[in-house]
Amino acid sequence: MAAQINPSILSADFARLADEAKAVEGADWLHVDVMDNHFVPNLTLGVPVVESLARATDTPLDCHLMIEAPDRWAPQYVEAGAGSVTFHVEAAAAPVRLAREIRAKGARASMALKPATPIEPYEDLLPELDMLLIMTVEPGFGGQAFLDIMLPKVRRTRELISKHGLELWLQVDGGVSASTIERCADAGADVFVAGSAVYGANDPAEAVRALRNQAGAATAKASWACDH
Ligand SMILES: O=C(CO)[C@H](O)[C@H](O)COP(=O)(O)O
Ligand SMILES: [Fe+2]
Image (cartoon, rainbow, N blue to C red; front, side, top):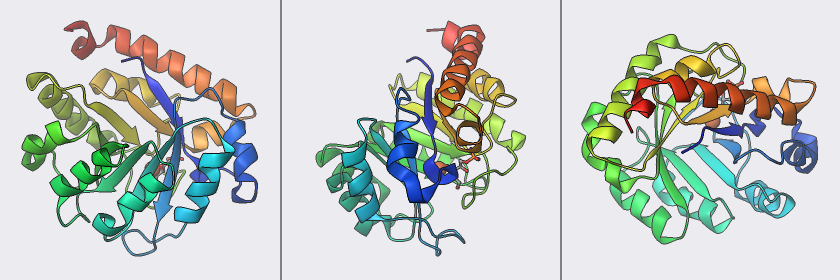
């Protein structure tokens, strides 16, 4: 799959969300960070805002749920119009049942790992997922510094995906920018969330194009992609 760039509206102007979504039309997905002030120490938006955003843009919504009780809430985000719903494994009571429910309702099912959560215990769950998200910052805030120490986990996850011959997308989120995206692509990521690097730019749409070109060039040179 070609490298995908998903701008995060966490770094957008929340009073102008429809315009901010339009400013990045041409991006693959719009990343929507849902925070409940319990799973993470920050509060953003919920189901009604996702419903309105889904009506306001043709770009599919990639909802990243940083919330407690995702088993209860995630299906509602599919009904609100999300094309992809990511829950955190640390918060899910029954991740396999939840992934199956998200898929059955018609969205892509995705699971996220915080920095201290290893991938290895979840190897057997990978076939149940359409995407795995490896956090490259502690979740909760935009604009944080990229955690280089997550790159070995990205690499090991890419190896597991290859070993099992899966179509699973591998997303990185947090501190992704022109100075870090190539290392992420080289390690095996193919979906890149970028908040401040896109919405902090003078021309957000151009920032998306530049990041996609950079990631594409790095992927073309990466050993994990050359093997296939
Ligand atoms: O999930 C997130 C934070 O928990 C955001 O998606 C992420 O931080 C994007 O912002 P930036 O690219 O500025 O780091
Ligand atoms: Fe996110």
